[in-house]
Each structure stands twice: as C-alpha cells, then as structure tokens.
Image 1 (cartoon, rainbow, N blue to C red):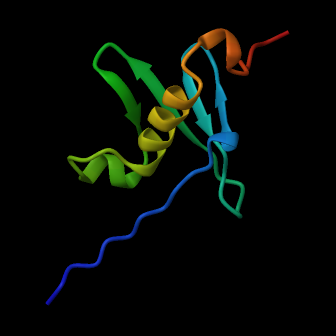
Image 2 (tube, helix red, strand yellow; image 1 turned 90 degrees about the horizontal axis):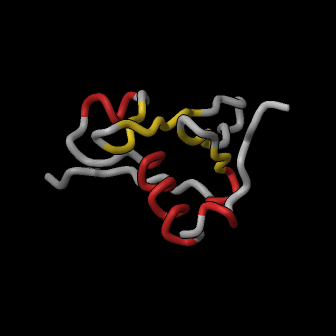
Image 3 (cartoon, rainbow, N blue to C red; image 1 turned 30 degrees about the vertical axis):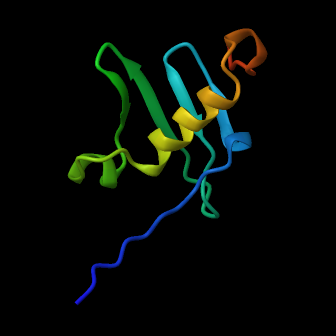
Length: 81
C-alpha cells in the first residue's frame, strides 16, 4: 500500500514580514500562521511542524519568499506606526 502525502503551497504574495518573523496569509476561514525567526532558524507552531521532522508548508513558503526577494530593502515590511 502506498503512503499518500498532501502538499499545499502558499503563494509568496500571501506573506508579510515583520521584525520577529513572517505572517502567512490565512486559508478560506481567515486563519493566518506566524513563522518566527530564532537563533536556530525558522519556527512554526502549526500541527505539521510539531509532528514532522521536515519543514511545513509555511516554512517552505518563507524560504521560497526569501530566495525570490533576497534583499530585505525590496521586501514589504509590517511595522507599527
């Protein structure tokens, strides 16, 4: 019997960057996910990130986002006014 795997992709246009990490756009229910920066790398609190040794779709999306727009000056930043 073959194992089925689900792969979900997140558009890089659904990512907002802040000083502490990234906010990944929500699903149809409006649930957004936060990926935090830490000394050990990117951390996500979603279920898949907690039970898997691999990166979740949120961390993969942030890595793709950072690779597509490498200069921080070119990325939109969320800040308090």
